[in-house]
Image (cartoon, rainbow, N blue to C red; front, side, top):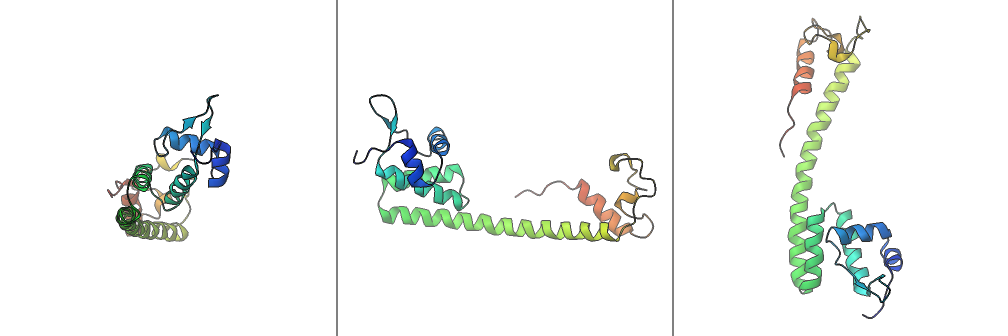
Length: 166
């Protein structure tokens, strides 16, 4: 081992906490380090690079499984192999982001419709009960049942809508 680093020094050089280093070791993202004669963890310069890769991958939104794969690839293949695999992982992550953007757009539209509905609806005449105690057919909490039937129905459907599957 070229340069023997303590967990504190590794954490400092990598920009993470010692708790994070231990966590990554515990979940198998960072390999179990060697121990010195008194049992303290000791790391090498390569562990700084590996932890930096892990930290950056997490900043890109990669899950622990993806990060574990990247960490393994980084230590077992050539730079070209790693780049090819990393490019594939980035492509998958971009697909996920595109799907999330679509989902967030739908969520935004739902929230805007609900916000507009509540901004235009009248307040409850009898405010001594909770929303859950209201009758869905007559509840003014969800809007006036005579003037805003479509909006009230839309809110009722939204409240009872199952979550979309991704």
